[in-house]
Amino acid sequence: MAGHWRSGTASGLIGRFGRMFPVMVSLGCAVAGAGAGEDPHRPAFHVGYQILDLPCRKEGVEHTLTVAVWYPTAARPRPHHYGGLTRGRVAVDAAPDAERGPYPLLVFSHGYGGSGLGVVFLAEALAARGWIVAAPDHHDRHSAVRIREGPVEDYDRRGLLRHSMRIAASGRHDRADYMYRLDEMQLVLDRLSDSEPFGRLTDPNRVAVGGHSFGGFTALGVCGTIPERFDPRIKAVLLFSTGAGGYLFSDDELAAVRIPSMLFLGELEKESARGSSGTMAELSGKVYRNLPVPKYFLEVKGANHLSFNNSFAGRTSSRPGADDSRIFDVIRRYSIAFLEKHVAARGDDGRVLERGEAMLTRYLKEP
Image 1 (cartoon, helix red, strand yellow):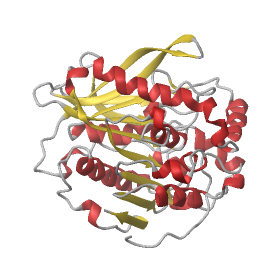
Image 2 (cartoon, helix red, strand yellow; image 1 turned 90 degrees about the vertical axis):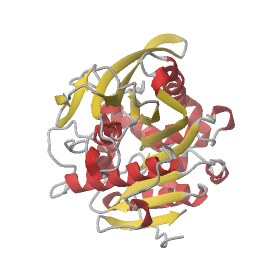
Image 3 (cartoon, rainbow, N blue to C red; image 1 turned 180 degrees about the horizontal axis):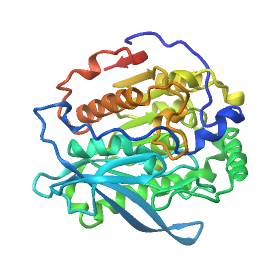
């Protein structure tokens, strides 16, 4: 193993009140550019953006699952305001570039109370590299951000906090209450492959899932931890700051995952306690320790739990003095290198995965 794990502390889904609420909500920092030109030997794409509404059922009631989709297009992009502080550059509702498909697919699950828009900073960059990225708005009990509306003005803040605390205090015996998220992840994986125009453009042999915070539980839930929920199409899992992935799965369940993984943690959140389940550093250590090789662990300098989301709050930084652009850049760069190598099978031409850097206070890998 490249390096040594040192247990710190942090809050998986929630810590104390001051750290608790932001953990749930898709906050963070303003989106940086798509950053497609990192490798001059790869074709760069313009980025398209569409919102899909997929019919679904929850507890026997008909619903619509709203999904944000980023994809390669030949159309020229324009500045786009997603809401709050988050802006990007996309061609809204443009036709996908069918000539250079099919493309690898990433389905990403947001943290509790958040939105599919939390992954804009990575989604635009991946689409510019020739990926399709789909991120649903889960039907959580409380939501502070939505794909179509952006920040929700009148959501129940106290209710979100109370339910977040309840989730943070839960364990494996409570998972039945959260299976709706796995249902929705599976729905996107299945329906996107059948949809127009994306069905014929997604490569079923190059599929990854990812998640932030509670979304890490969602992603791991379809990767083999729960045998009846396993989707064999998934070739890798990308995890952003997930305590829930530690306290909602046992060691043996995590060890049942048989695909490459990359796990991020913020340097500033590792000392936040998560009740009786331990700290975020301990929970992250549990996840990393039990997942099979190849696997990667990255602790990001100056990052906290909010640093893995785009911002929809009325502030420009996840913490005073934070260099959010550098934090986003390192998360994006290693995530893309991981997905390109282990899912798209295009290698790691920049040798990003071979070494750490100054923005990583810890980098572990078992290739």
